Image (cartoon, rainbow, N blue to C red; front, top):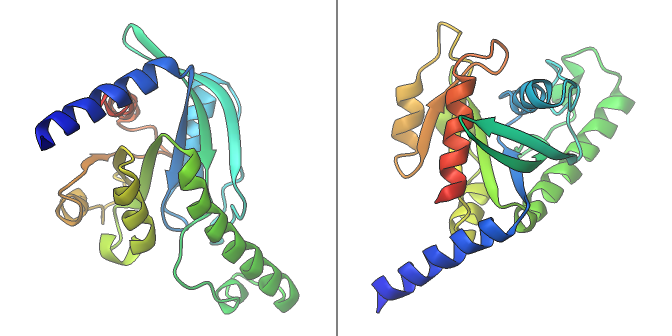
Length: 211
C-alpha cells in the first residue's frame, strides 16, 4: 500500500512539473553565505544582468526578490525558472551586529527590524516554491548555519532540496563537513564568485527538478 502511494505521488509530482511552464526556484540559507552572489551569477549567465546587491554587511537582502522567466540550459535541455532570493535566515537578529560595520544606531535598528520581517516572509514563501537551493558557506561550521525551522519546513513539505557548499575557492573550505551534516541531501561544492563548478550546479538543478 505504501509503495503504491509513493509511486502515485512520484508520478503526480512529475506530471506537475511537466505541466508547469515556469518552476519557482527558492534560494535559502544564512546571511553572507553567497545566495545573492549565486543568484547574480545565474542572472548574468542567462540574462546579462544582476539580481541584487552583494555586501559584506549581514542581511543586505532584507526582502524577497524575484527574477522571472530565466531560461536555463544544460546540454540539449532547457527549463524556465522564477528565481526567488530570500533574506538570510537567522534565529536571532541583533541590531548591535550592524554597529560593527559603522552603521548608525538608528539605521542598525531599522536594518534589524527589516531583516527580522524578511526571515518571517522567507518562511512563508516556502508555500510558493517548487525547488529549494540551500546555500551554505563551506568555510564555516554547517551546524551553526542551519535554521531548524527551515529544514523542518522543507522536510514537512517534501520540497526537493539541493545543498550548495559555496566558497570552495577559499582555503578553509570543507565540503566533507557539509556532506556529513546533510546525508539526506545532495551536496555540491561551488564558488559562486569565481564561477567554479557552475555547469555542474546547473546539471544538478535539472536532476532535482526531474525527481
